[in-house]
Length: 271
Image (tube, helix red, strand yellow):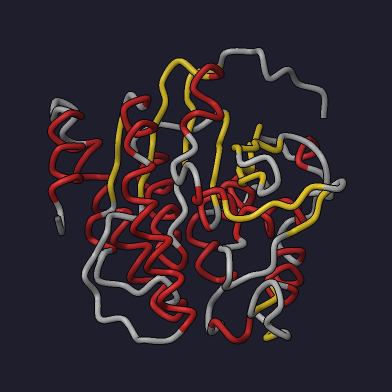
């Protein structure tokens, strides 16, 4: 599909990473549609990138729930010899291929940026073209838990390592940017194993590295209702979607609420 990323569009949507909490993004997209807002360009990190691609591929928010219905973490990931990561995301990739009938990012009907971290050069990377699946897997590859992904000679890991909310990737492409942060930090009961320790460490850094991108957004939605769910709680997808929908409606129905106060409350939460 021929389109120019220099074209300024009415609405952009930036979706943060957050593991299973990323299901909240589906609820947000549903709320946006009900309020007459249809994003023209979408950027995503990790689970936010997954939802961005599903949205761009034409998958209805209600149907996004069905993609992962009944799937546990072990259904999507395969354990591997722990040299550069404990799990492979091959099952995850096979599942997504059933719902995304496009090979390359530029083939999608809606403009998408899949954001990852260039592990070799220590910088952000926004993929806007090339094979979708390997770039999605790169965006989701939390270090230690998952293997880094090699693309054209460079290793990439989860985009949330440096910037968990990818407002930076599309700020110049849209007049009104909506940012959705589904990773407000929470003091959920975690287990002392290598996977949860790595994931919790990732969440700690993701909370602070999202602040600058939150300031770039014209409308900011933080899915506080999803904080009670674990990052790997894939079986609670319907409840997480409902939480995202509720939080989005609260913001969209009260547009006068100050973004600065939202960011302030975000920084103070669980401090």
